[in-house]
Amino acid sequence: MQDRPNAAELAQAVREFIETEVLPGIDDPRLRFRALVAANGLGILEREIALGAPLVRREVGSLARLLGHADPLPEDLEELRRRASELNRELALRIRSGDIPEGTLAHCVATVADKLRVASPRYLERYR
Amino acid sequence: MIFAPRCAFVPLFGADIAIVRLVLLAGGASKEAWALDLRTPQGTRELLVRRAGGGVIHQATLTLEDEHRLLEVAYAAGVRVPRPYGYLGEIAGRPAFVSERVSGETIGRRIVQRPELAGARAALPAQMAEELAKIHAIPAERVPFLGGVGARDVLGRLTNEVDRLEDAHPAIELGLDWARRHAPPQSETVVLHGDLRVGNLAVIATGLGHVLDWEFGHRGDPAEDVAWPLVRAWRFGVDQLRLGGIGEVEPYLERYNALTGRHITLASLDYWEIVGNLKWAIGALTQSRRHLSGQQRSVELAVLGRLAAEMEFELLHLLERAG
Image (cartoon, rainbow over all chains, first blue to last red; front, side):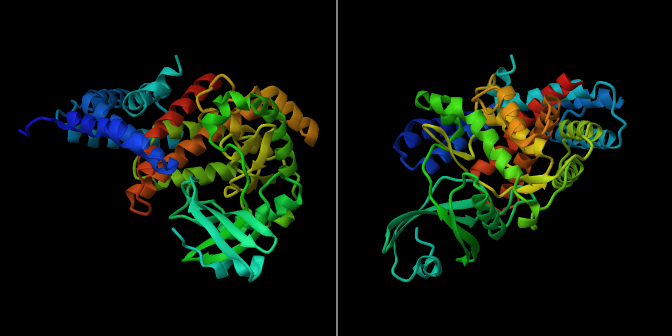
């Protein structure tokens, strides 16, 4: 077991350093923009550490229902991610061949909303 | 950082010149833009050097030489573009050209928000329609290097780009499926700017100063170009103003149709807005792969891979509405 700070706390510490100590001293607008992007990237990482596992579990569950797979969901997170990738490929191929499962649009809306909960939560609020 | 030898500019501006200033500006991700102040016998010229970067966003990006040629043709056709001065060949291993450096606001968020640009925002919709009308009237034989023909061609290119991503994107597949099933019959094919939107215009107090960033020029359905500035990403947060966060669509479309004699419909813009979101979702994913592959390491490109979900969400929202 690693000592604290844990992964999320470490990402947060670096983000806060960029925001409070680095950004105020940058005049070059290009460098400033990239520093903001870097801080945003760390924010994504913080949210992924907090929310990532339940969201990928929800995605795999939804994909399995949509595609009619009854096998139990893996417990291991890496295994879940592999399964999500495989099932997304299967769904993409079904769509490409014109054999679109009932409920695909609703599944995609829910899954992409979950991606935004990690990548860009404020963007999601613009649709309320 | 000085990268360009003075001699590169001698064929265009004569031997009696000196580089006063040369600095890298903020600019597009796939190309460098350098501000160049050149002392000549007629005074100091404020110039812009466009030079190739590490890669391309879409496969269909023009070479710097062709982009410069398109700029020359558009300039001659009376389109408001920075005056092109000449193609420079390769500078330190990468092709480049030089043009007039124009002033004006190019940052999208500022154009849609700044109080002092309210007058510009009121004038922009009609001016954008006017520039598009001029661009779409450029005779295709003057720019024979431009590729593309219409909706089917666009969707084929997008499908190829999706197939190059190593992971699958069901939302994008749904969008491509819808776009194939609803593709309009081939009407006419015209010269398109390919990226005319807020953020690629130099905006001054009176509105549109110059049309910039011609690297995505191609031929295709005029409605593709007319609908592109409607894409939500180009409203820069002012979502309720569907035309680029600055205005309503109807007067813009009416002005375009009146100038060109075309009868582009709102339904046609709805179709091409969906295709536009597909283009930018796939473009963002493709750009992030340039970082991941090591072709161009950049935190900006890396994060763009995650922001593609914004365009996917908008795409799905539009598909829900289209039924």
